[in-house]
Image (cartoon, rainbow, N blue to C red):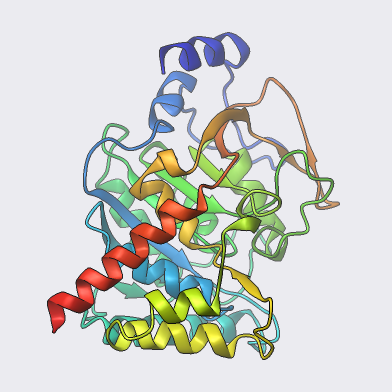
Length: 332
């Protein structure tokens, strides 16, 4: 950590004022930001999960993984907007995600009151008028009760709308949170036309420009190999109580032809970094500049974020399968 800090301070001592947007954000000292970007030491890690839960099937696995992991303490779950062939629009996607969160919680026997919150109904269109959704307001309230020494971790696995909206509403929270975002591609990848990133370009820009401590898990080509198969799911997930059977069902239903087929469960990796960062090696890198062409530009004077560069697939799945099996055994 000491060498990382020394190098970072030499290369990057800047005051952030919402570069490229004209927005004003509190200046977070680079030394403090780098300290906050160190892997969490205190256990359990206080976190919230921001998820477009009905977008496909990986969010459900991520939510279950977080809720059955004693290394983290999930304080709240936020439904994020999305729009693809599983929704008629962003608001419908958010609502379907919220309903899916309730289904998952019911199967785990957890009450949603004061825990599950609806998020934005639209992507950000006006930086001066962010949507004051229940999710954004809850995040602000929880962040204000946190501190740089004991930050709230925000694991985000969809469009980053809710989190960016909260930052725009109350910029001071960037001093008390760490965003762990599965979004965008590797900084060496030629395009950032990745689903979570490209849905809400303004929100993505807020995250990389505001100075909030960010741990980025790039989709291509880093998290892309975090895949599993139907036989593995049948062996280690099916039969593990109502939640295990549900996860197996949605996994198998996602694709008709299972021959030589595997599925990436992207979103589990954001939770996995909080459970054990050693499974996901990372480096301090300069925050990229988000262009209107869905690419990154770079400036070595920019502040630092942490970028995951590899995913050790096997120990993460081993951990998830073991916890799921232990939970099912305890229920019998």
